[in-house]
Image (tube, rainbow, N blue to C red):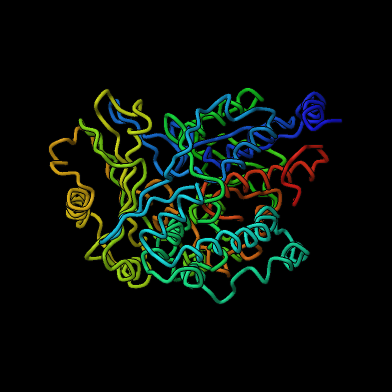
Length: 518
C-alpha cells in the first residue's frame, strides 16, 4: 500500500464515534498542531484560547489597515510544517502562499554588510570578497554541520518520557557531535577567523533567546539549516500559518472556542481530568494538552500545592530567555530595506553581556527590522508599509522599570533606525504604532516577559527540559517553546506532533507520521 493510500485508509477508518475527548489549552502553533493531528485521527478535540484571535505569539496584529506578526517572522525548516499538514491529510500549499527569500536576510555590521544565501557558490564568493581566506572555512562548515544536523535531528524528534529514551542509540551516536563544553561561538571559531563573519553564523542564537557565547555548541547547526533549506515568508504574514491550521482543525471537527480563558486544571490526585474555565464551566477529557506559556501555566493553571519539581520557588530559579522590546509601525512610506535586516551593535559582545549577564539596558543596541511590505505589499495600504522592529532586552528579572524607561527607549530605537537603517525622517511617516515591552509580554501571560521561554542550556534540554508527557501530572501533555524540543516555530510544531503521536499510541489509534522516533 502506497503512503498516500495508507493515509487515506487511516482517515476513513478513524474513530467514527470520536469517543475519546482531548482538550487543548492555547491556540498557539504547538496547540494548533496537536489539535489538527488529533482531530484528523478521529479524536473529539476541544481547543480553548483565552484571546479573541488564533495564534498566541504567532497571531496577527491589525492596526487600521496595517498587519503585523506578533512574534515569529522567520520560517525555517519548512519541511516540518509541510509534514504535519500532510499527516493531517492536507497540503500546506493549498492553504498558504509561500515565498522563499533570496538573499535570506541582510546582516549590517559597523563596517560591512553580509547577505547570506542558499546559493553556496554565491555565498562562498561573497565570503572571498568580504573576508578573504575564509572560503575554505565555509566549505568545512557545510560539511561538518551537515553531519551534526543528521545526528542531532532524530534526538530532537524523540519524546523523553523515560531515562531509557534519553540513553538511546540515536543519542549515543549524537554525543560526539554535541560540542559539549563549547558554545556556538567556540564552534564558529573553528571555521572562521574574522569576528564579523563568525557573528554572521551565530546570530541565530536569538531564536533561542540566548547569547552565542553561552548557547550550547550543538546549535551551530541552526545556521546550517538555514543555508541548507532556506528561509520562507507566507503572504499575509506568518500568522497565516496559524489561521490555516485552524481551518484544517475545523475541517476535522475540532471545536475551537476563542475568548475562553482557563482558570485551572481539574485534578483527581495527580490525574488531570480536564479544565475549569474562568466562567465556571468544566470541560472533562481523557487527555489534556497544555500550550500555555510554561512558567505561566505552572504558576496559574495548576492548583497550588500540586507541583514538586516545578513548584513556584524552583521555577524562579530556572534560566529563562531574554525578552524583547517591540515596535510595530504603520508607515505612509516604503523604505529601501530588505525583508529582513539585523543590525549589530559596534561592540556586540558588550551589548550581549549587558542583556544576558549584567541584565541592564545597553548603551548601544542591536536590533532587527522586518520590512515585509517589499515582499508582501498587502500588509499595508498602497504605498505604505508595515514595519516590525525587535530589540533584545533583559527579561523581568532585571532591575528595569519599564513604565519609566519605555518612552525613552522607544526614542533610542527610532534614532538607531534613522542612523543605521537609513530611515531618515522616520518619525514623520508613522501613522500607526504599537509598543510591546517586557512588562507588556508578562501581562499577556508570558512568565518573566521571557519571549523565547526557558533558555536552552544543556541542563534544560532534551530529557532535562519539561517533557511532552508531563512528568508531574498524569494524562497531561505539554507543547510549545517551554517543553522539548524548544522554542522556534519548527521545534514547536514538532512538540505538537510528538504529543499527538504519544496520545495516539496511548489510546491505540493508528497513524502515519514522518516522525518515527516517538
